Image (cartoon, rainbow, N blue to C red; front, side, top):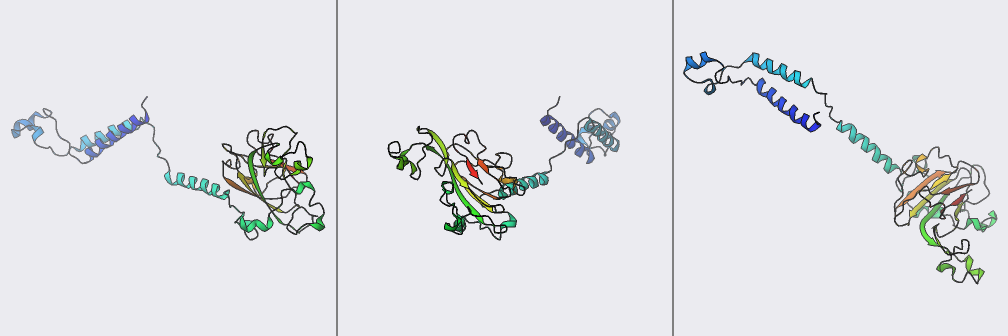
Length: 289
């Protein structure tokens, strides 16, 4: 069976023969017509004969019959390919770091510095903000009132860490040191873990239904990719924020930052976790209330 490369070479040769035949420069071979040779005293090869229309027609018919034996080769539609790739890159740009849904452009700044007034604390789960009369107006952990929605901004850092590390100092003999910032006690045995903002469990997200949640996630885990799946959120208008790698988004590579923007549209006690390997069981889980 002919390979595609052989078929192309054959087609080029046949097209060249067809072009020569169409120009009408057919020569009579030596000895093909004895009368021409004896009358002129010269060989037919030294003097061109008149165009042979019948020979050209026969050549065209032969070429057509040969071409009909091979399947037609459809060349790729280059403009369509370029258009499809452009659509793909537009999708990647849509889920880039500074992506903001069109419906939220008027209320949600693209710059991280501009989001600082909406930045939420990491230690909401410790009970420091349970009394709504003693918290600042920008805190999203509050008594919910219908129609009074807020922007809740979080900065997450996924990184390798250690239980009972240097931040714990003398935690084993002085319980006060166990509550120092950055100290992760775990079950009291030193081991390698993965943490979000050096906390175990990860920072709790506590918002009201209808709030806009913005999370900038930086991957500080060397040689690992990651995502965040928001377990329980329907993501009806933001499916690209569902956090399933290679399905709804590309994995977040080492040292990259990805911004999640979603609406808290599902009241209840939910949680978030990575969707990559065993990162969830190594410590990267947090509450979403």
